[in-house]
Image (tube, rainbow, N blue to C red; front, side):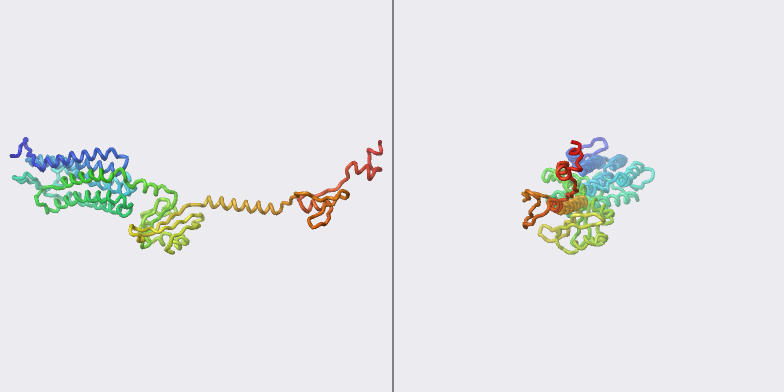
Length: 424
């Protein structure tokens, strides 16, 4: 016989939910130790929301009084409303779409959960969330009639869950195969609560009124715990690779097999002066229309490495073929490295070398032994011709002669004009 504690009847389902609470709290603690990684931090908050939700549902299910079931239902909406939001934030962060998670966007996403919690707390004034509550006398399960706001909240939740699952699926396509087992584990774990909640919301429940979602989250928690140990989910994550590409000063663009822009890093966006949301999905030839030289290389269909001049700057272009695991071409990778400064220095160096070489051709030097006449001082050249000393030196250097008479020669040749001789 089931034990009664005042107005509560704790069944195996209630104890299972309490066990779910403990699992979620334990997993949240493990994940919080890795909170430096944003995706692990959001998943820890998701597990806290699930723990609160499961604990409230455990007591709501055990309660035998309508007022108690309503109270625990209102308390449970703290986790019910925030769980989908934290899953969405987790999936976007893990899928490397965290740049969309600005404070403004997160605040806007939190509007519906805050309103839903307020509407649940003030249920007695309007009945927007629940139109009525009845209890099955045999199972003590509460059957809720759903008001208009409930369906608004369901649409909001499914929208977030769908986008989150899509972000994880895109991550499978973008990340290296090494990370795919991790993401598949996350996708399977994400699908379980969604399926369970669809069964509950659409009324195709084998046990009317029984919400299987918290139990599904328990299985998700166990699956994530296994994945954390087996695949080191939040130890080995493709964060560094993505951050590296985003931080690179080189422009990077990925073009798919159909010639459309599949991805580009911030540096390439700056080069094109177009944000990513306007580039992704466009034909690459259209996105690069202002750079016809680059389009020509892209349309050649071959790998290439060349220097190209784009927008008055010089770039080292590398065009590589992307292939899947079977070696089939899946797209092209364009990498542009700005070498304008290096090219300018090389041009300056080449110009300086040319100037020096030109100067050297005009430099005339005298070297070696010079055959000179002991009497007349003429110099013999390599052909045997004799030249006056002045002419030879002028022809073989930049020196020029100006003539005069030294004092000794003045005394010998012109004694009558030598002042010192006459006065002596």
